[in-house]
Each structure stands twice: as C-alpha cells, then as structure tokens.
Length: 361
Image 1: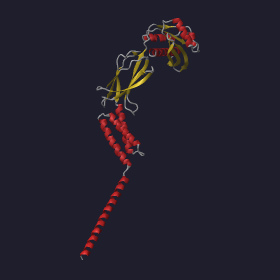
Image 2 (image 1 turned 90 degrees about the horizontal axis):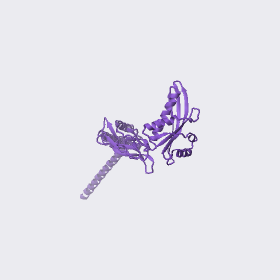
Image 3 (image 1 turned 120 degrees about the vertical axis):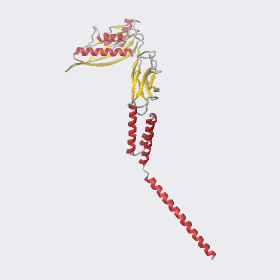
Image 4 (image 1 turned 135 degrees about the horizontal axis):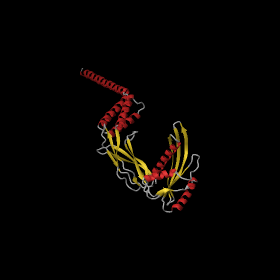
C-alpha cells in the first residue's frame, strides 16, 4: 500500500513539473514573439525623426546662447544623418531646412564697417597704420567671432599672391591687421569676411590695399603715338602723352616730361625704342612710358556719339634694359558730340594709365 502511494505521488509530481516546464516554454515563446513584433514594427523614419528632433533641440539651445560654432556643428551632423538614409522623412527634412534658415538669418545679421584704412604705402616701406574694421550685429554678440583676412603679399619667389589669416574679433568687435611690407607695387584689396566653413555669401568688407612705386623722383619720359580715325599715326603732337604727363605730375611724379619716338613705337620695335632712349637720355632718365592710342569705334547715335579708344602702354626701365609693365585697355564714352566723346575717352584712358604706372612699377 505504501509502495503504491509512493508511485502515485511520484507520478503526480512528475506531472506538475511537466506542466510547469510547459508553461514556462509557452511564456518564453510568447515573449520572443512579442519582441519580434516590436522589432518588426520599429519604423526607421521614427528613429531618424527622433534623432533630428534631438539635434534641433541642441542646435536651438546653442544658437540662443550665441554659441554659433557649436550650433553649426550640430547642423552639419544633422545633414550627415539625413544623407545616410535612403528615404528622408519629410518631417526631418523640414527641421533641417529650418535650421539652415536660422543659420542664414544669424549670419546675415552681421555687418562689417570700416574703422581705419591707411593710404597707399610706398614700395619697401610699411603702411602708415593697420587696417581696422568692426563687426556689428543688432541681434547677436560680435565678440570672439572668427574672421578670415585675405591680403596681398609677395611670396619667397617674388610673386604677388593672396594669403589668408584667421583672426577673431575682440571685446569690441574689432579686427586689426597690419599688411606686410611689399617689395613690389600693386593696386589690390584686402578682404575681411566671416570664417564659417560650408556657408556661402558670408558677410564681408573689401578695402583698397595699395602700394605705390618708389620711383616718383627717379626721372622718366613719356611717348604715346595717337592715331587718326583713318588709322594713321599723328606725328606732330600727342594729346595722350600730355594728359598722362599731367596726371602723373598730379600724383607727385617729378623729373618727368614728354619725348618723341614715333617711328620706333609705330613699328612696334622695343629694341629700337631702348636703343634710341639710351642714346637720347643717357643716365638722366630711368624709365620710359610709351605706347599707342587708336580708334576702335566712332558711332553716331540718336542722342550723340559713341567713341571707343584702345590704348596700349609699356613701361621700360631704360637703365636696366628691362620691361616693367605692359597694359592694354579700351575706353568707350558717349557724349553729345564726337569731339566731346573722344576727349572724355582720352582723358579717362590717360588717368587709367597714370594709375597703373603709380601702382605698377
């Protein structure tokens, strides 16, 4: 009897264990099925949207604190996130577009103003003062903002190139920059612009940056040959030579005058020009400015005349037998009369040539 009872108890316990084990297995299967359903129902768009919303929250916070560089980093990260998915959710795209709009608004709130721009320096001498600009914004702080300065400088090989320097505005929003001494003359610009990579049309300011020749008192001569409308050289006098001479004297040139090299210039023979100049001037003249001025167009229009003059100029160091400057340009003017148009065009051409000599030799 006891043996029978023991068998019954054993079978009962065995049954309970099976049932318990079976119940756990069923629960495990249900749990796995639920997990698979959750994974299956997870939407990639929801994930990217949550990420972009998180980025936008950080972006807005940094922007409100004027931590613009950090805000830009967040924006770029958001852009990279969108570019990594095959299908961009419209919600995320709209958020990132709005971030870009806020960046543009932020950048466009800044304006540069000139505080100080020195006059032209002289070759091999320093500028009289630094270039100074101020960055302003009605909506954001202009303190410690990165600014890229682009300026002309002579390379070690003697070539005039543009270089860049990264700087920051000070506590008053100011940037000060001393342009380097130059061994060559030039007529260029110096540019101050916001320095944020990846963004176009950034606020900037361009200022004249000029280095004048150190040969104003070295002694020179001028020989331009003017041509008639029919294409014939005028050998008796040159209005252009006289106008260039006057313009250079007004710019501070001394020991300079006009001369006559008509045949050599018309022939386009630079070697003959050099030989004749050396023979005529000896060592009394350092440089010779010469060239031609020809008619390109004379047109009668309803309310006057249009005249275009084409000028070609060369500057030669006679003492060193070396070409220093070559220039060619066309000036077109409209006036009520042909004479007035021609006169205005010739004056403008002469002024341009004089500027090129001042900042080119």
